[in-house]
Image (cartoon, rainbow, N blue to C red; front, side, top):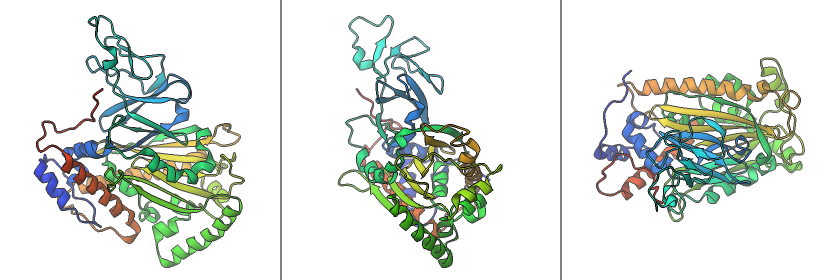
Length: 446
């Protein structure tokens, strides 16, 4: 196996984009090249709304955590009331990191180098020995846009007022009816696990958006999740088996006043195509005919599923919402719990996948839920997915790799690739004719 070693100039990147073949996996360089990763940062990561964490991680004023993406580190901090701020973790003096711990609680954020101190809103509070008359308002931490949606914190690295990003409400609002019944704002974090992999983020993305591999690679998931018949097996008989049982469930769910069915929206800037490759989707469907008994039989010690109902659900109808605001936040919400996956690119061949499990804010561990039964299925599946992604990455590094065709059971991936290629082409078409830097950081002028 040989990793991709060749630096790419602008001409070669344009050639690769032009050679994209819909319905096939991408050329090798898209999974390895540092130059392409830098283009992704400029035209995708820094313009997209990125899911970071749930609001219950920072319940009190001054609580913060660090969010890492593509070489950047962002301080996400709770202010007064419901206010949440996000700042680049870069001191405005000489560039030191300000917050060193991955999470904590502060009254002010003080740089450990020369003790410049910043208020929670990012404004400079104190800097010793600055020249008289220095305008402190010009030395605030560089900040990101922040939106909190149904308890989930999203940030955009592009500052407020720039017209390069899609409107968050136009992305999120179509999703709200599908998860509103769970009242996820009033949940709490019960458990968190990280599944870092030595693989390109697109390998993780592609794997998430198909279940063609489920019967082979995820025996537990395929047994527990009935939709694997439709999305993983895919024969006419298997599809009909799922749809027949799901139709029966839909009638029962609607009788309870619960959502059922599917939504799919694509979102771009007004008057333009989806130039930021942002996505939103939701489907509420049957988990399995007897999900409780099945899950209990599959857990290592036969422990019970969570029991305290979320939000306004009237009963556990054994359904779930499969939902997401891509490219980074993907959830599974049942009547009693949510597992949300965050996929974050860290480097050309380094990706972090973090799963956070949420339960009712009043749920008590050992009574209403236990960690083992709550987390076992996604934990087992993500460990398998990590190995899948790393194996795939290793194979794509071979001189024998050529893009292969996707099957009908992988039909979502070409759609995602189409948006991805379009976004890069659009961004590159808008750039200045000559660039002095390889990496275009977001415009952070204040």
